[in-house]
Length: 488
Image (spheres, rainbow, N blue to C red):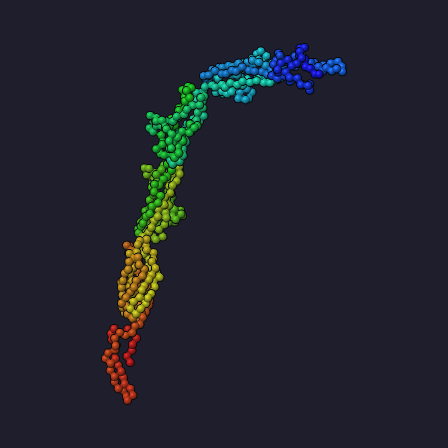
């Protein structure tokens, strides 16, 4: 049989001790001073004397540290100390300190004193400052285990600038931001105020809105700044420690050129002077340039063109003057305004008005003995509505003329009646608008159709010539004079 013996007592002696026949002794929840000592393992048999072996079990415990904490309401310049006491655990042991997980190094303001073989350790911090804030940990180790305890040190620090506000310039219509970032313990609260007076007097607290709002980091942000936002701005940072911080800065909002109207239509009569004007709002100085159909204008090459630019109370203006405008001056002109903060452009459509061109492609249709139908193509109207078309005609040799016969400007066809049969005529058409008449278009010629006599001949006479022949004569009626009828 197999036995375990401690201090002369055969085990198990309590419920924490368990002996197994395979020669194993299991002790649960070991306790120092109770379970340590000299143990014997003895084997007895009827075949011979007992056999035994003696061994020692030593129970060692890891270190345990009593809780500690830094006191509240510590300010810059003060001092503090905490003591780390190892309340349990076997020596020898070593004690060390960490700050934010890194070994703590001693300096003129940081001192560590160890006592009682490392079971007591005191950390002293003098001349407290922001840099001392952090999590301090005391660690004790022996050959069995380690123990630790941590305490958070918070040194109250008055606000200090991370980014101090400064005078800022911005361009109207664009986003803008005035930086104001402060640090301190506890974290400072940032507040903005504005004054539009010069010099600034009464400041009004800014409340965040869709136009302007205070960012989490304290900066003042404008979604789309306006010229009315110009003024003096006060940034305050307070955390209840010290007097706080405040700075007044000037915000200057500049304006890029801006045309309120982006497109204008203009008309001018051929031969007159045309003046194209563009007026822009924005900061001065402002310069202007012109383009015609997308091509830059050269005043030297375009002798009829001249440009005049000048400042206005709210910006600047430019005039493009064209002497004796011609048809080719009908174009899209673009005025560009530029200053140090941006540019803008405006389009001006210039239309030159003139008398219309002559009708084109005049043709004759539906020819009969006494009427025809004229048609033509609508010509260039001179940039004014055509009010009417006028047709004139003449017969060959100018023996007779006809017209004028008019139709409204919306028509491009005309029926002419009362013509003579089998007569060659020449027709031409002109048009007019409110400025005057065009030239006649090219003449077209046509011969009217022949028609049978409408009246019988009269004055018939027969004169005998011989026994076998007579001479018959007659007269043709006046209305049939254009018929191809001969006296026989």
